Length: 371
Image (cartoon, helix red, strand yellow):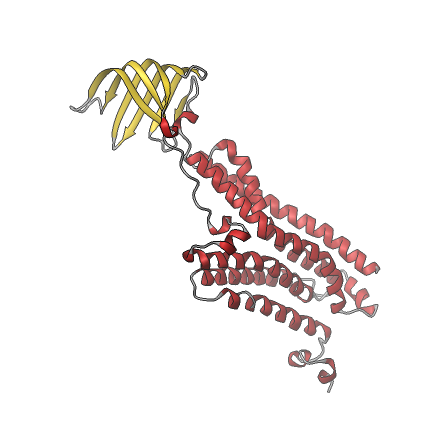
């Protein structure tokens, strides 16, 4: 009981520490990437913090999986190095007795990983996409503010309005610069108003102004005076695009009637289900993998741990791609990788139980291995 409590307590602290480190690295990477998007005009700088938070939420399942695997390995490696495992074995316990307390600690986290992968992952992806597309599809009137030069969504138009009366829809001292097909058009006017049309369209109508079109050094440069000139600042409201596979809920993945989406939907569902199963397989592999000879005092196990995680994760992504392309049935692809991880964990644990026997004898039942 004392060993179990000590093990779970140390696992809790170590998992929390590893998770905080991974989250810090993730947030730092996201800050650099999303601020780069904001600088390039791909996202609204005001939405940067929200996008970073949503992206972090989306990857919490992966971060928890890695944290659980690494923390289990770190704790057991330290126990081997500090000879605490010798006390464990001297008390009549074996490597198999580690499985129960570790699984008691890991099971709630694996359930959380499953919930995050099934529900939080698609929600965070969908919200991020909506925020980004809302900014890309924003109307020009949302960019118009008194006393400031504002650029349109596609960088084809620049607005400047000195005074804006929203209640009366009146504007004063208007400057509009359009750039289309390599030609520059500039319209200026002292007065105008905002016109609402059917279907949600909006336009700015300028009175008694002047329009400059073309390049001043070219012979086709024109200066036009107008009594009334209208420029559209919002088109009809565009429909929200259909969600991608990673943005669909479990219900949408299962009930999508589109035949072309069946395989991609199943592949996405395979990945979401596979993530908690991968967490379970990695925890079981970490128990025997953590063995360290106290006299050598090396961390070779950490190298193997990184290699195992990369192989496991890439195999899961590879099977997802095969299912998405229709090369493999989802019912065939859902179990081989995780079954292989379970077999590897079982073989490694048996190797640690009887280290004095040859490797092939260790896989036999105890009654047969001693003969």
